[in-house]
Length: 170
Image (cartoon, rainbow, N blue to C red; front, top):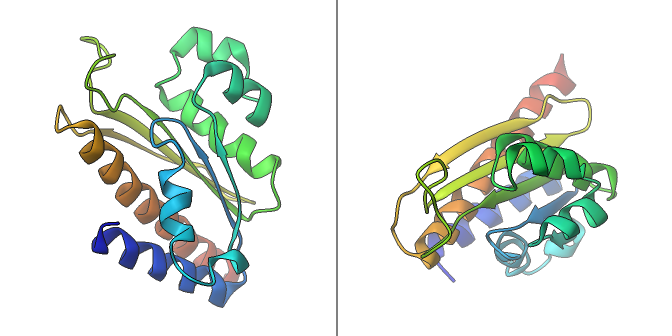
């Protein structure tokens, strides 16, 4: 596993541990790679609560409660679906922060409107506005899109944690 990703994961886990914050993931295009990166770190079980791999639209609806009409109206690779995945993951877990992603890792499956390398990442936290990032990595290869998604998802979760800290202190 990539050293940069492991350092990011370890940093996030340590920051969560210090605040007694639990994490959960809801992944589509990464197929569980965010959770795998987090759990590669020894002792992660005191921070990682669970992970959902919801690759199909049906799984997104059944496991996370993403309304089928949101998927039908916007497509699985969209901001509304990523947000709904994160919020559903938060509701259906005992976590304080939920990380979600949906995208097109390639090499096929893209279109002019939604090209290969398009990924939507969302992070939800109790009492916080859900955060979202639209990433356009381009056709850099499936493994590279997935690794970049993990890096950006862990970074966004860290930003959510920092905002939670500011809010807690206010």
